Image (cartoon, rainbow, N blue to C red):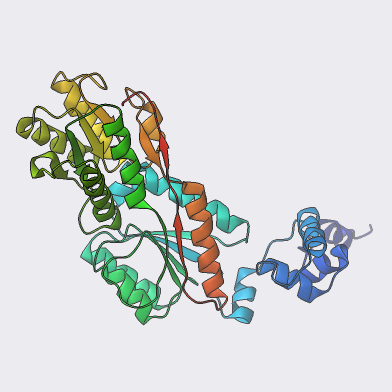
Length: 348
């Protein structure tokens, strides 16, 4: 009887996974060219980059990240660090929109994203220890508050960093991407006044955040343009949550029942304001016009659909990722301010 065991083993032998050498041979380029494509495509012609990407798809090549890290001394990933508690991440649609955009932008460079929340002192201590071990190559820092200890820690450990929004109270060069909060607020308040409203209130964001300060400043500047005295009775400070928008609106109605418009510094707070107005029997926009800020997905689904200031979330994500990757590759800090857009719907 013939022993066929070796033949069975040969037939069952696992196929060797493709290597970077296989990709180079398939694409007709050098191994170094493939390596540069995998690291972002610097100094690679469009034709060579396309040939390499085609070969990768055809062969099913998967990057060996452990091997790459040994060679480059890099982790091969970046962190999306949210300086808020986990409940706010799930409540505020802006954070998930930004996370999705950054993930997609990094995917084009084959860089995975690690989500980290640090909204309490205990979380910040744990995150600081974690990041001190350099498990990522850089950090996208979202929702920074004045005096954020995370910024100081990241600077001490020399991790490349890009902030979403202008960091307050920081000295020295620091990369950030922001929208023009003040001009966006001015566009909204002008829209409310030019539509015939006379008593425009505002629900501002926290005064330790750039959006809170700049949007309130824009509100005040437009009142001055129209020679309208600033009235503290018409101002409330929220925390960007729906509950705070509802509570602030209730207090405004109690203090200033004559108000006929309100500029709310976030769409989520504006939804809370709409709830308070409905409970009080005030019609929107007939009795009181309501304007928000963000153009989050919830703005279109509000009742009535919310007039708001659009932030270009896809563009913000794209630029944050571009600046961070540039820093990782040795570039210095940079700042980008993006324009906003007034979106008029049925609430004004």
